[in-house]
Image 1 (spheres, rainbow, N blue to C red):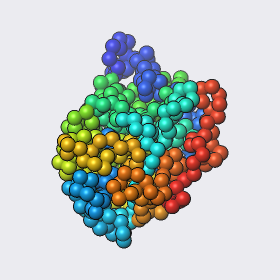
Image 2 (image 1 turned 135 degrees about the vertical axis):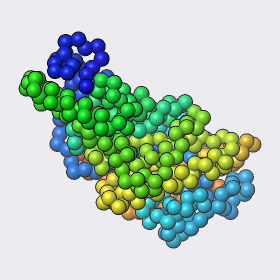
Image 3 (image 1 turned 180 degrees about the horizontal axis):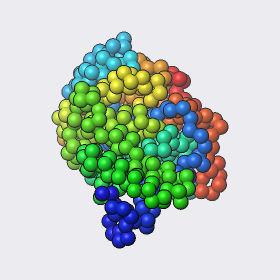
Image 4 (image 1 turned 120 degrees about the vertical axis):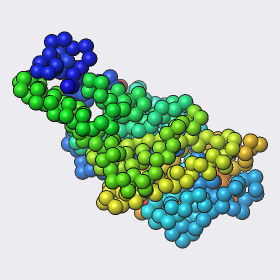
Amino acid sequence: MLRIDGSRARFCDGVSRRNFLKIGALGIAGLSMPQILRAEAAAGVSNPHKAVIMIFLPGGPAHMDLFDLKPEAPSEVRGEFRPIKTNVAGMEICELMPMLAKRADRYALIRSMVNCSGDHDAFQCLTGRLKRNMPPGGWPSLGSYVAKVQGPLNKAIPPFVGLSPKMGHMEWADAGQPGYLGIPYAPFKPSGEGKDDMVLHDVTLDRLADRRALLQSLDRFRRDVDSSGMMEGLDAFDQQAMGMLTSSKLADALDLSKEDPRVVERYGKGSPANRDDGGPRLTSNFLVARRLVEAGSRCVTLAFSRWDHHGRNFPQLREDIPLLDQGLSALLDDLRDRGLEKDVSVIVWGEFGRSPAINKDGGRDHWPKVSCALMAGGGMKTGQVIGRTDRLASEATDRPVEFGEVFATLYANLGIDIAKTTLPDLSGRPQYLVDGFQPIRELV
């Protein structure tokens, strides 16, 4: 029986009118679902389905230990890892990523990311902006812009989903803020505190493993509601809200038991335990992200592990890099095999790089002067390296790339015209999605 706690007068087997309307009002981040649907409709007609998967590496990954190794540098800089050749001539990456080395033709490496803010959070990677001179309400994240401009592809699937779990340093767990666009364009978060975003009675995502019982409850609820005639009293948006709440499409996308076990095995499980103040190493979230964009989400953000290694840098990376290698390689294969490679853009990066010199604790410290990124899919020209650093990986010496260029590229891949698209901030002033940047010319 599907009902809402605290009900008194009930229809049929326990559904009251008052509590039925409460179901229709359940929402995301405090806003009712009908309000969200009205706001989405106001954003205009949805475009053909393109999507972005953003994989944030919290804490700042050591660029010279992953994608920009310097084997000729002094020992106190080059570290313990050695580069290996990839299937692209002249491109080398860390020896702990043999799977990605075989797939280098399907991604591009940016070794010269500059203008990092130095802030220890996900903000710049989610917005492409610095925090200074923000408009009233703050800068929206990419996912919020996309939800506003393109709207939902399917009413049962949120256009913007954040998979980042709880962390000790919650600034790394930020899935993306809506800024001046407002709560309707915040990410739907089906993990951590966001599990309460999907509540039908006391059935949450924690209990979605029992899919048969849930679907049976929903079927009975639909029959009871239809027979009562209550659906006729709701406007179209309330009916859409009910469709989203009772549809199995979102729940199915989040339920890995629906996936081919061979595909699940390819991604691996990772580790559910948080690393210090960072997040868990859930390679399975890469698969959830693919399932969400395939179901209709336009932007999925996730955070993977913790890369803030001021000490024990190399033992920590020996644990984390192979997991990233497996999960990301599986994602690239999966997108190709399912015909999504040209439509789904993948970006992997952190908030800054790490210091070239290894400190007394065997770690590397914060280094906002330069960092790296990996971009794949989206119809981009892959199989190349963009930019170059000096012999110590301390500064960009060739083709510096700014965050705004990456975002301009992602918007272009999504089919959004950044030259013409503006949205008003809370003062009514029109704001461009990016200011003064063009897509990365080597990629488009």
